[in-house]
Length: 321
Figure (cartoon, rainbow, N blue to C red):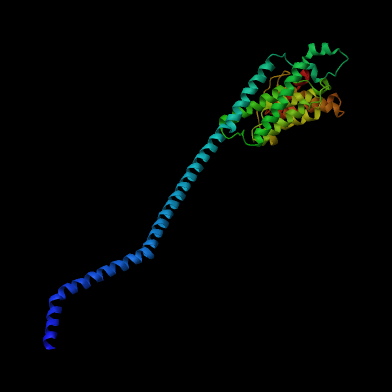
């Protein structure tokens, strides 16, 4: 028994290295198979899903970032486009278009003769329509007045929508000239009593509306503006309106000490204003002396002279009246 035990011990000892190596190899294979099992059953699957999820998240982030960048670019482009559109349709652009239209209207005005002075006091007569047309060019003047009425509406809408603004020195000059030319054409249009067959607003109403646009833009109302409105009021026989406008223009508390053109003539502010003042006083029942005194008071208000010089001027002024 001892000998067999010794042989078995020697056999185990001699084969031990192979056994140990086999056990080690079996352990590595077992470990490898366990690891393979784990990776195929759970861990590798989880890692792939995480990789896919991570890749998907990165792609989503990239898309979101790209969308954000595109939105920012579109926003900038939209703002630039809005600014460009605003610039193309701003007050200057609209004002230049208005000036082009006005130049054509003024060309039509140049083709007409000077408005007759008898519009200031005459009434429609029983003259033949053809005679009136030849005398006053009523059709051409009425057509021009209709066009200027439409033009006033367009300019008013542009001012209300801020497409026309008086924000710079150049704009102020152009807008003032534009509105002044509108007043000029309106004041040279036939009085309403000569165009009763055509329902149109009176020329004085149109001029008053233009004056309100000047006030809305905070622009100075100059003598030429008042002259045109006073002439329209006189031609419409609205003496009170003409007198009020004239008094406001020469009142130092209303318009300040604004110089007045002293030249006389039916195409000047002074004589047209004094005529409206005199007719208003006459309509109110003043006699000849009262009318003269009222006119002289207005003249004195326009003169910055001493009382002595006023007395010296009194006789020649009275003589001219």
